Length: 142
Image (cartoon, rainbow, N blue to C red):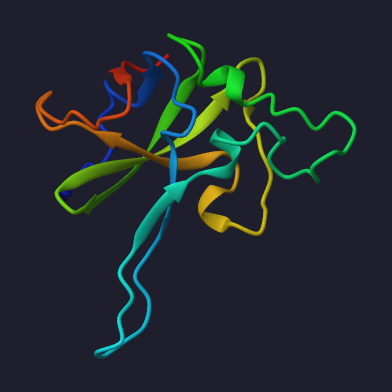
């Protein structure tokens, strides 16, 4: 039996080429029915933008965001390709999950399911022609 393969075996991860802070998004899908459909939208993922640690109350002891160091430099961390693509306004976004060095999967299940366990969407360029693409490169499995 044959089928579609969403995630290539040779290209299952992304690596930052510079800071991805603010360049990882959460996606809220379409909602409603009939003539009252609300279009899906993207907004910055809280865990990838905030200095406050994701899943903790601001001001809480030890609330510095330790995840930002994994996305703020060349090769700082790895983003696992989760196999989901969203095309919006002629722009292509790919769902990823941050793998924290020496820990692997981290984060929490929170009030925003689209960001649970450090997931989000990065924008991909189309044959290198998309000037708004986030700065990352596909890499082979590690």
